[in-house]
Image (cartoon, rainbow, N blue to C red; front, side):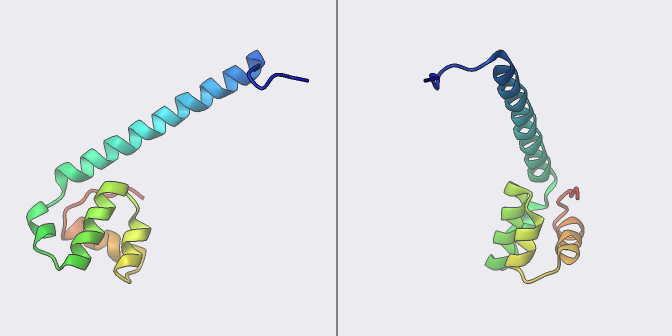
Length: 93
């Protein structure tokens, strides 16, 4: 019976590559969130009704423009344009 704690060198390499890629993705998401936070027009966002404010803040924190659009019953394009033009939130699709 094989021990579950034993990994072949190939398996270890595979796990290391995936962990490195995961770290890259996490870092990219963190950088994108910081850019959204930095350039957002917080005065505009805070002046919005709660439903809109929450959707904009959700988008800033997660980058999930589809989820934010759904919260507001908007199309994705409509939300992205609103976030970019009115709230000054940088977007990447």
